[in-house]
Amino acid sequence: MNKKKICLSLLLFVFMLGFATMAFAQHAEEAAGAGSTNSAIALAAGLAIAIAAAGGGLAQGKAIAAALEGIARNPGAAGKVMTPMIIGLALIESLVIYALVIALILVGKLPG
Image 1: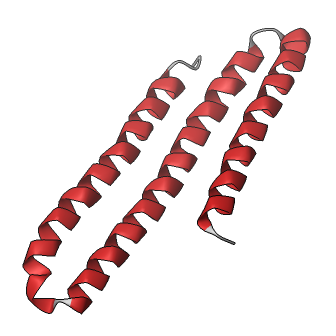
Image 2: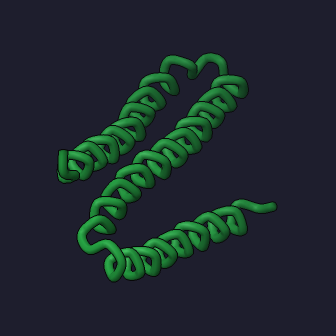
């Protein structure tokens, strides 16, 4: 499969999950009251971490592969390639850490 089909499939899966969550939330609100809000918060925190970790892992793998390919083609440029690669990896990882912080804030909103 090409990258466009994989991205489209992943996006469709995320949207389906979101719509299913809303449907279950409406049904659960009718049955249990405020309990569905807590389950939606917990689900959102879990999805935030899962999607961020998956995306961050894919992005870091692609960045490292591109850097190593560049070094293999021109070993003399290894020093010039490594520094921007490490900065890019740090920025990618910071996005995953932001998702972790948001997930922790969401979990903090859950009742004791």
